[in-house]
Image (cartoon, rainbow, N blue to C red):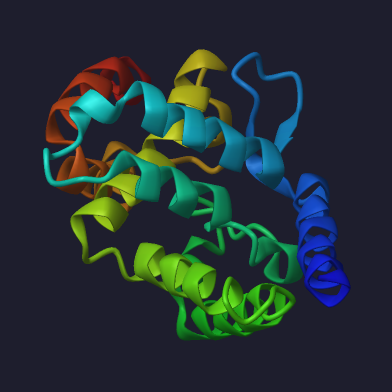
Length: 194
């Protein structure tokens, strides 16, 4: 029991480091950059509140778990903003490899009956092929859009984002898992790209 608790708290203490990883996205009031711990919590809340936007086959409990875990790898890799000048690196092989190694290390802190299952849930989110992961990825893409809308353009202005970039990098992923949500959000973004 003691060894198990040591492993579980080693993981939980490591996860606390996510609060120190600053993201490009600001809080909705634009006052400061959000950290990845705040982002993960906010996304879990998005899943809870926007569950009615998901396909009926989606298990919201699994989505919430994915969203709580999805950015833990940023403890090692940091945030790679999708719209930055280095935005191409977001899905690059080198970033994916670094994130996979971080996932091995971080989830490896947990006991053997917990770590592999959570590591697999993280990998499912990254692959974005199951209904749960597709919806989770949609929410991961929509939350920064809402922050930018509420903060007067936020990182869209900072990174000179075009309507086409927003559609291809973000909108397509939101529409894949939550088409009604993207239709609503896209209409809200139109004035920023007129």
